Length: 120
Image 1 (cartoon, rainbow, N blue to C red):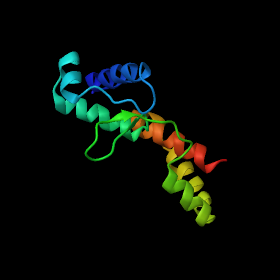
Image 2: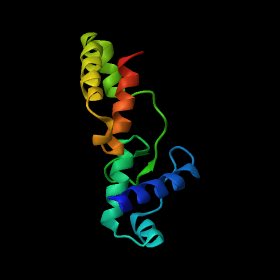
Image 3: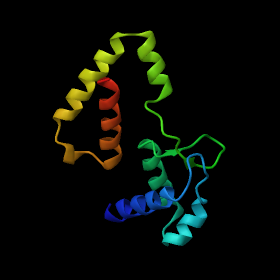
Image 4: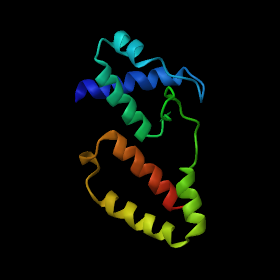
């Protein structure tokens, strides 16, 4: 798992050199550059997608994410259903009560985003 963390961090470094919306290098190119399998690259990119750092739509290359305050669907839902914010807040509190070290980085990042959303 240490190699996975290193790979994710190296791809993050690549992302910092790109503009929001810009395409990532191909999986094949990244695999060759870091001397790892394409499956390892896919896992790393999936983690970055879960963290909101990379955007991906089916049939398109992954791109550097354009920063958003919150996922739009969740934002619309909270406007339509006022009770959702309270439910989200309770959910985040329960997750936060578990030892943080038990979560992978992608879950920790997601939890932080949810916490920001639940406490405007």
